[in-house]
Length: 312
Image (cartoon, rainbow, N blue to C red; front, side, top):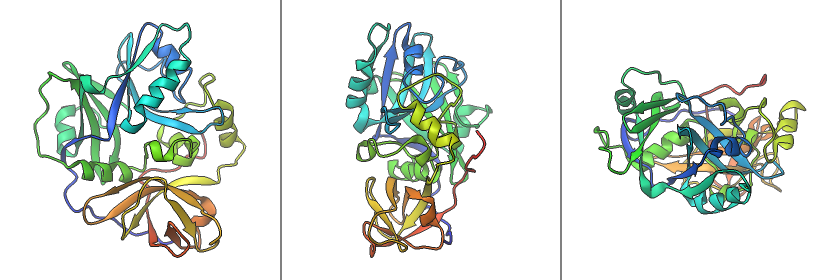
């Protein structure tokens, strides 16, 4: 399938509100070790200057939620995730706490969470590296670097409610979400709950899975998918002339009888519609992709901004 290019309707630069995201707090002396045993990435050995992309899976390796995680202090870990999954994720994680000294709660109302793109991200980092998954403490605020999008650096800014927010040009929440899609890293949200194993969203290629850490729910399935050469579904970025929505099915012209994939995350900036799609690899070669039905709107693939890793 041929690939096209994408031009946003406005510069990807500024400070954005993030109404679709929230924050889970894990507090207690065992908070890091507890999460280490539940998530796909290393939390226990995470250093002060690091953050992590991670997933929480069920026993079948299907993703229940995804997070950007960091240790705010020795006994406090914060997890940024989709707001529509927070209540059920806190409830499910809490079921596994047992005797661990850890308490999980929805802390979304206790913090400010903003998205920084372009010059706004560079200003907040103040000369620090823009490489992804780093934490830079700035007073009581934290700047967490993300994968870039549309050729621009991105970061989260997170701070207590009473902290003065950074100043800079406004970036709309819609355009920020376009950037999320164009980074090629999709969140798990309510519409895609239990739909994917991490590799279907390329999480192992963007440092979201640690294959050397100990067990976590679904670990055997995730590892088997990786090392038996059975990865037949991957995430791609696509563009459409019509709006898309997470959870919509995608069909290939090679087989009209059944879907070949799913919309993982979608965004609109007023002029264009983009999405991260989870697709069978075979459907991306010598076929046309259609949204919702075999004769649905045509989808065009865009380049991924990172390489898929074969050797982990």
